[in-house]
Length: 196
Image 1 (tube, helix red, strand yellow):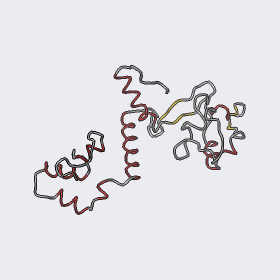
Image 2: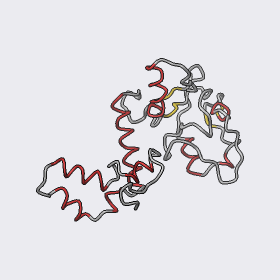
Image 3: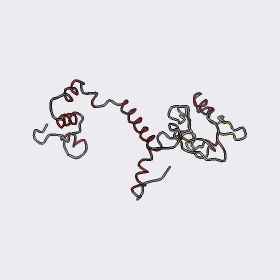
Image 4: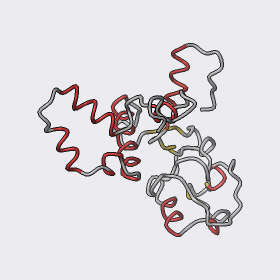
């Protein structure tokens, strides 16, 4: 998944741009362990985020592949090499993962889908969930304005066009000098009429 845009067709450029959406929510299903990286890829099904997080201060080989911690004779995990770098929860989460087949390659799957394949539906839900989580982390502009103001605007006896304009003005969507200045479309945030 290291393709670049270059001078690609519109379709290819769109795929490159949408790659983040497709990969977000995908996890590696471990078969022979030769494709997934231990420390940088999402491959752990039982922990938040799906990726390992080494203990603070630990130096790890970010290119080490999962295959190096599989004992193919017993078809069990050999965590001796990395155990000092893991939390107890992560070590247990790895041990719960079934070892795949040495004859099959690792593959990206979507755990939230029944068939484990990407679909527009799963992409949409992933974007919506991500947007919802990020909006919960930061306060919205509507939260900094008193709810009574919003009620007054939305229940005002004016045309919908005026209500929409007021909503846009309060959310910084109207192209006043300050907004144009923030978008680097003007040299000054001051009003050209009153200079304030």
